[in-house]
Image 1: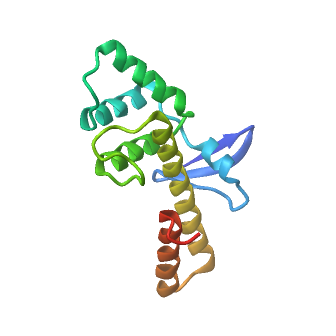
Image 2: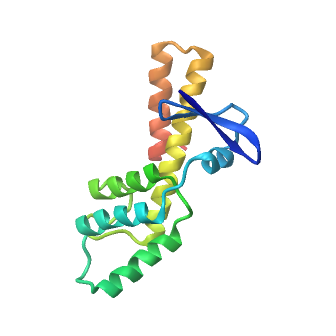
Length: 156
């Protein structure tokens, strides 16, 4: 079953089996805008996981609520998958420049959420490009390798 996503009364994307499919003329900003945003409660649930796994000094409930408010201020409305992906990346120690013991600053967390969104949009674009151009398996593997190097900062 396919659903159609509309922005400003114009069809922007279709969703089939949980995957978003955008026309090639859609901009990254349009794609990001079309993705469903997480509720504040969903985001707070993810912060609880992050805070439980990456402690800081002992905090009172009041201080904890201020910390959560700071993280929420740093985040633009974001898809839940991106928030979950950022939490997972920090817990796994996969974010470049992160402290491996203590939780990230709100700014660093928001930056990782934006990176998660970019990766998803970029991956969708790659899948569409592969389908359009009908690359050989060798070409696909080389493109995926180069993309991974670009994302990790090995190649600029």
